[in-house]
Length: 183
Image 1: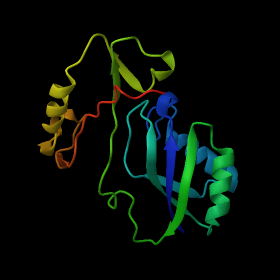
Image 2: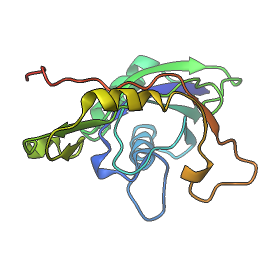
Image 3: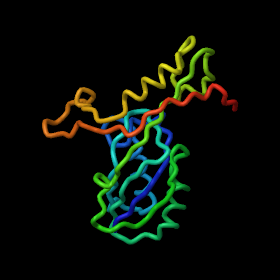
């Protein structure tokens, strides 16, 4: 049986999504939770992509392959009860054997947050970069538009394979000025 699952996670204590032999990852924690819930390891998880260390996700998709049919509402409740506090399941839906988590995603969204001027609150450190002094926000907004369009990202890949696909299209890049925001 095949399931598409969306989760959120705070990546601060993880070395990305994909399992690694020498580091704690989100996939490792997800698989440990399934192992506990199912009381066996007769399942497999496959993520829609990879994330870097410390990266958080508001919505990350993965596919679950398991030998028994699942009650999706019950499984969602069990996941959220047993996941660590920094991982949350959003929804689960059964898919057919033609669904491919690696090929079906069509878009990814990235958010980068920063602040300038006064030193930020320490609780913000895992999520924001802080710059001293003033920034030229108008220039930065114009600069963000340079990223839009088709680009070759070969030079940003670690050990790229010769047959890799490195050309990607950035549909939209925007810098949002939130200096008027108050918490």
